[in-house]
Length: 94
Image 1 (cartoon, rainbow, N blue to C red):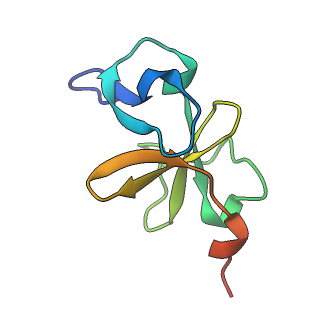
Image 2 (cartoon, one colour):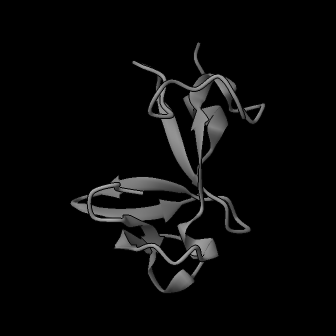
């Protein structure tokens, strides 16, 4: 949640659908506003502790993962944020 304007990432219409838009919306605690930060290095194991002051590790790539059933990730498509399925194996470090 943005502490200044109290808005959250929100999946448009609450639909857990491929390429559904994500926008900033006033907080209402719906399932379409619940997210998990998943670091690329921790993708096989959910991390629940050890975060920094603001909840992020410095210089570590991460995904913003929806807590809706399909667990899609936020992706920038053009100038829009959308949710998409992700193939974690595609992004594995070699």
